[in-house]
Each structure stands twice: as C-alpha cells, then as structure tokens.
Amino acid sequence: MIDNQLLKTAVKAADDKRAEDIVALNMKGISLIADYFVICHGNSDKQVQAIAREIKDKAEENGYDVRRMEGFDEARWILVDLGDVVAHIFHRDERSYYNLERLWGDAPVEHIQSELS
Image (cartoon, rainbow, N blue to C red; front, side):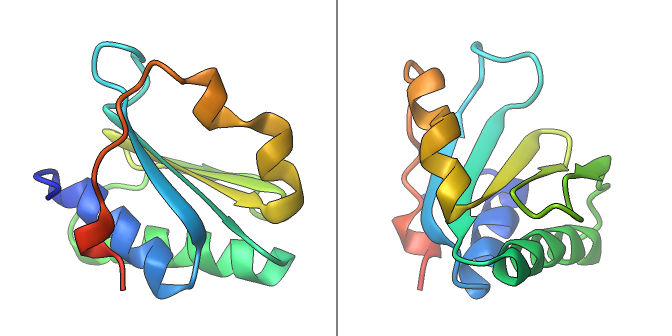
C-alpha cells in the first residue's frame, strides 16, 4: 500500500495509459533529487507521450506542481519532475539500455500492485 498520494497519482496515471513494467523506487536517503522514482515504458512514441501527458495532467488536477518535463518531443525517455516524485517514461527500446533499476539497485522497491489494474 502506497502512503504517498503523489506517488499513487503518478503510478495510477501511468497504468491508465497502459504503461508496462511500472516500478516505483524509494529514493529516500539515496538521492537528493526526489523521494521516489517511477520507471515504466511504452511501446511507441505516441504511447510514451500519452503516459507522460497523463502523469502531468493527473498531477495538476490533484493540485501538484509539475516542475518540468524533458524529452517529450523525442519520446525516447521522458522525465516528468513532480518534486518528491520523478517519473521516467522510456520507449521500450531505451529502457534496457539505461537500466535505471540496476543503476539504483540499492533503492527499495515500493509495493504498487494495489494501484495497478
């Protein structure tokens, strides 16, 4: 069960657009950038953009500030900075190349199954 509402919002938004292999890493004490990273991927440029747009829109609808969004036009790796939560939305082909889960391998994985359809 996720106790962070912003993290829950981002995970649910990604799932609503059929993001694949959604992982949430608890970055507290590991990264100064954010408390959580959400990592997922889409299978096409359009899907990657739709996932990023949905995360941005749902965060704003719930009163959260979207600090910035990078990589949207290229749609290979879109970063959505929500402050305490940073979402990384990859194109399927790029995800294994960058392998953020391995890079941040010491970060505990949050249990998000209850948020997924």
